[in-house]
Image 1: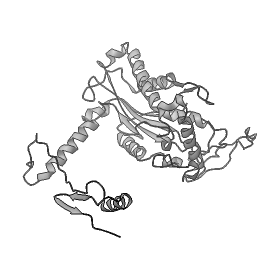
Image 2: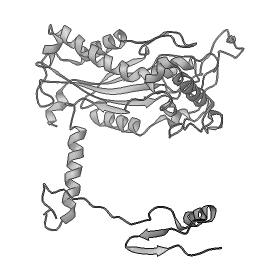
Image 3: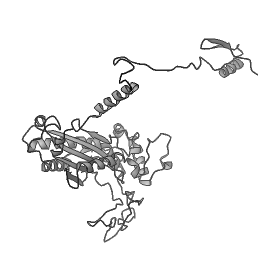
Image 4: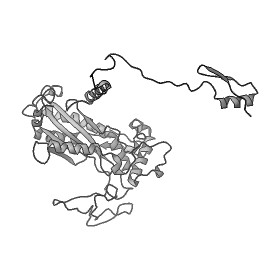
Length: 363
């Protein structure tokens, strides 16, 4: 990557999920103090008789964080289906983002690549309420990638305008199935676009730290499992939080509906319906994963002879390394004795390797 890429306009973008019901949260004020969770001046209860207000100032390790104020009011079907369609929402977002850039420059989308390259790297992070949201680095390069200078009209303001437009323009619809009504899945209202600069609060080093933290954080913050749900598992016995159990159960329930069979919700129930990659990036963003994989393979091959730097075999030679051990042929001696005893036939002669032997008599 050339050092000049740091001068290209780049932003750290966060796209979140919409609300599917109020949950306990930890809010901080402008001074950094912890505020009440969900204060309601008039209080009141939901249709299920539970309070709709929470005046607790939750600690960072409070187990109630992310849990619904009323589980019966929470839209579990909507949450699961949103997780399942989040990758498609991201794909449509990137398409709408490029269309906005092209329109702003007076170009066709097909001609945009001749003037500009949109590079991005994205990671998915689970919120405590069980919904994924995406953090992405979006950078504008010149034609062909980071080696080229972007045009003068490619600015940070253009990135922000394109993000705001694309986030509000895309949607994914699902048809009604069973007792689940038709739904339109969209991004949440909390969209954050922060410029990445060489100095200041959000430098490239700070963003790298954020990405590393998100990349090592899975769905355990929700209280779910780190393995797939087996057919023999009883959801009631799983060591998960109550909220995660409801999400997992909803995945299994919706998976039985023919309309949602293609979402493979049962296979991804432990991920609460999300089945996308936790990290993706465009080909021109940086070194590709294929290049890294090829370099690792080449490095491991050359480690066979470090002292001379020569390979122990020709580059085009294929080595097949295997070890075979003969275990037996036909019935085991025990099975042969049992068969002879039941049928009254003589004991068979068993062959093991090049040795021929007869099973001994046994009482």
